[in-house]
Length: 252
Image (cartoon, rainbow, N blue to C red):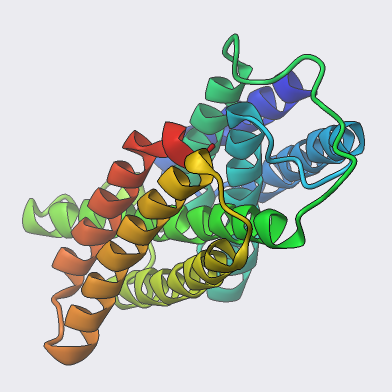
């Protein structure tokens, strides 16, 4: 099922890119991503049944959950703001996360079934990974803004990509709102983490989450207090998410 999800995300990315190159909008990208979303949800349901808890027990499950969260926010945001091209930029990231989960050692072949579930720990993990989805989509929208800005500066306004990119104002608005949503989810996850029963590994994870929360808090405070040009906000959203991915192994 994981292989199927990867193939669906790859098809969405490749087919969407082909349509964009021709100067057309792909009406199939959303459908392929919807099928991918269902496949991811099926995998998480199976893993959840095996663990008798939220399927976030190993790095592979965290990666799949993150890809699922990213896909879910894409479908919600893409439909609200009519950003059809967002799927073409989102699908490669989803494919990358799912491919990492397929690597040897990422997914436990026989996950341990939990007899006692810590609700605070489960909520901490779930909110944190959901935040990754929103912040990841903010980074994707940020990449789109950077590409649009570069096309405008280089006067490449006759390309199929430029013709399909949404207005810069809409992209900037999406980046800002997704950062706020991701930060709110990250805050909820941090609160649950402070309340949950802690071990040595949990403390290490909590420090990482606190550092990520502080970085996004500084960005949003600067945006609210002093204002920030859309280009710098988009670049900051991308850089912070890339840094988050670099320390992703510390999530467990």
